[in-house]
Length: 325
Ligand code: ACO
Image 1 (cartoon, rainbow, N blue to C red):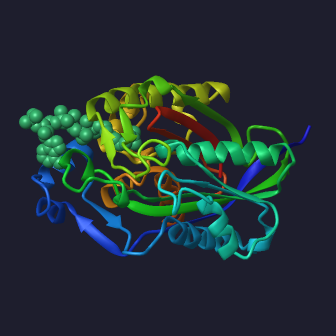
Image 2 (image 1 turned 90 degrees about the vertical axis):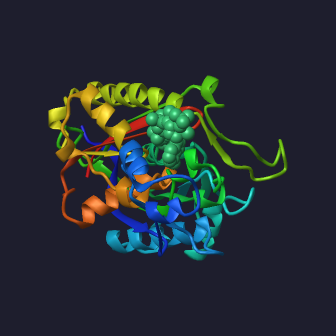
C-alpha cells in the first residue's frame, strides 16, 4: 500500500561574512581560546552585518535550497520559518521571506521552539504534507542570536552564532516500506517547568524590550544529554532500527561535549556525526539545516542515506526526526 511521505528535494544555507574567532572574543570578555574549545568545541562563529536581518539570511538559504531542488518558488505552498530572533514582534519573518520570493499563495508562518525549532518545523510541515493540505514546503531555520546576547557575559556570548539553513520538502507517494525516501517519523517533546533555565529576559508583553539570553549552563547540559539520548532512542525504536542502521546523525550543534555525552549513551561513533559547531557555534534553529547542507554539499549525505536529526533548546523543548534522504 503506497503512502504519502515528505521527501527532501533540496537544501541550502547562508552564513554571514563576518567571522569572529575565540581570540577576537578574548579581546571583549575575560576568556581564552583554550577555555571555549575545551568546554564547547567552538572555534569561531559568524555574526550578521549591521542591518542584515533574520529574513535576509532565511531568504538566501531558501533560494539556495530551491536552486538545489531545481524548483521554482511558485511551486512552494507552505513556508515554516523557525526562529527565536524574528525581524519584528509581528508580522512573522516567514511572510517577509514569502514576499521576497514573490509567493502570494499558500501559507507562511514562524515557529518558536528555540534550538529545537528546525525539528519542530520539519514535524509541522511533514504533518501538513501527509494530510494533503499542502504539497511543497520550505522549512527554514534562521537566527541572529548576536542581537540577543549580552556581549559582556562570557558565560553565554562565546557559545552562539548567526546563520540560516533551509530544506524543500515535497509530498510524494512512496511504496510504504523501509526503503522509502522522506520523513519516517517525528517526535516532539517539551517541559515548561524548565523554562527559566534558558530564556531571554525580555518580550513585548512582559518588559516591552527585546532582552538578553540567560542560561544556567550546567542544568542545560545535564538535561540535554538525557533528553536527547532518550528521544533518539524513541525515534530508533519507532522504526525498529538501532544506531548502527543510521548513516548520519545530524544533531543540533550546541556543544561538542553534549554530542559526546549523547553518543556515549547511545553507543555510536564520532565518524557518523556531522559536526559544524567548531565553525558556526550554536546557531539555534539554523544549526541542523546548516549541518545538513554542509554534509550534503561535501558528499557525505547521499540520496538514500538514513539520517537521524535531534535537538534540544529553551523551554525545554526537544525532538528528533528520522528520515531517508
Ligand atoms: N571563559 C572563561 N571562563 C569562563 C567562561 C568563559 N567564556 N564562562 C564561564 N567561565 C568560568 C565560570 O565563571 C566558572 O568560573 P569559577 O569556577 O571561578 O566560578 C568556570 O568557568 C566554570 O563554569 P561552569 O559554568 O561551571 O562551566 P561548565 O563546565 O559548566 O561549562 C558551559 C559551561 C560550556 C556553558 C556548559 O555548562 C555547557 O555546555 N552547557 C550547555 C549549554 C549549551 O550548550 N547551551 C546552548 C543552548 S541549549 C542547547 O542548544 C542545547
